[in-house]
Image 1 (tube, rainbow, N blue to C red):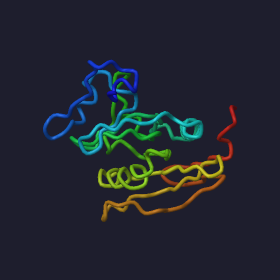
Image 2 (image 1 turned 60 degrees about the vertical axis):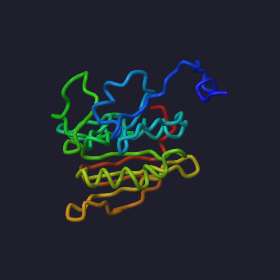
Image 3 (image 1 turned 180 degrees about the vertical axis):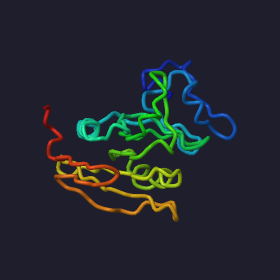
Image 4 (image 1 turned 90 degrees about the vertical axis):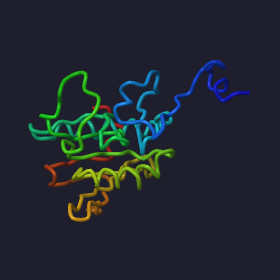
Length: 199
């Protein structure tokens, strides 16, 4: 039995085959029938697994609270890609970016120099990418702040990192349980226990 049939696809289905040298960041906008939230890491397509309730609620909480607290020159969006370079176009769960970088409704990616915070909510299938691969790439691209969100007994724990421009690597500046309160890159105060509140 073919893998295609196992996933409800007929035997004529053709899986995307990478060109020599791998896919490029621009290919993500041209390849037909890619699943939602496909990322490009080192020239390879990465398909994400179905979202958990925690993952969706953590994204909603951070997206809403950051949007409410960001200054006018910054904006917040969820699940948009960053074109780091020709072979890397990851999709953080939440982005804080310079408002002037918004080019309109057809935009599909942001430049790393326009991103202020990249947030990744860790899933079972993304642990290595979110803990090791993506932070290394984000730091090298000059994204000043990286947050990694982990689940602990149903609540988010936020690991906050700031880039050292000399080493182009992130340093951990704090681990936040229950409440995330920061003064950089702007005043932020988020009740992490509110993850399940609707209003």
